[in-house]
Image (cartoon, rainbow, N blue to C red; front, top):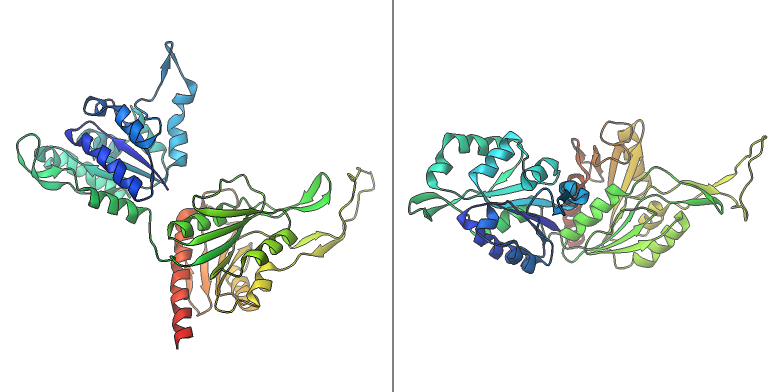
Length: 406
């Protein structure tokens, strides 16, 4: 998991170096962004040495008097690769910029560009903290979903006593873990997961496939790894990066996916089938490229193996989760699939709904469980959906375990 640590210009900036080490000990990868004022209190070299990464200190990197184009759009790249933006210490100035949408340096611009969750740990003089303007900014940020780690009370660098000291490392790290939903409730489990499309060859240059990007399945794989599961990801063709801590097995066709699943299923306690497996494949793949003709061609298709049903038939005490991408009668089709496939949970969505289709970062799903529980979820990011799915998996897993004990 990747945390971007924003360091702003206050006396407590030196404590950010200790925070970097603590976050690394927790298993986080840390990248540091500093404001120019922060550089007056602690050098970028310190953070570069601690993280082994470039420290960003400005919106533009000057080279021979000419702005570097790469640096000009770097805030977008950082925003896209981070899992959490953590600002500690956060001065009254940066809180005001975040609150008002001012983007005049790298950190404030990064805040506007980031879609990842944000945690701020304010540190300032007690009167600055208590000022109505600061409290108004804090309240506005909270309303927008920013998580605030309140400052501690005590002796301040200015000689006054009161609220304003940077919160302790334990509190800041705990907030980061909570926001990132770092849990260990899948520790001891092995999750076998399929994701992405399959490609069924028509000839040496063409194939049948679908519009699946694999994002939802990869989000579930990443979330399961974060929750301490051993994760084996059987993936169809996709350009997505393998999530950290996940073992990936690449396949192309439905037959290859079934083979890979069968080779890895024995040790799995949870199997999640998020891949969009082609229902049919060409009955015969041409040895040479099929030439275009005026008359056209007729393709004969044959059904692919049903991977979910095949594994569910011999699931034993294994928990089985399936996905259903529908265009109509979502609930009816999902409940039918739940029963016919012998699954424990079906994640269903209408792919024609806004924010729930292909190649988007959000999803709108309903979870249909074997025990009769239907859980509709509002539109949320696929990362958030992934954790909600795993919350239900944990609940069902505990129920199955209890039934086995009885």
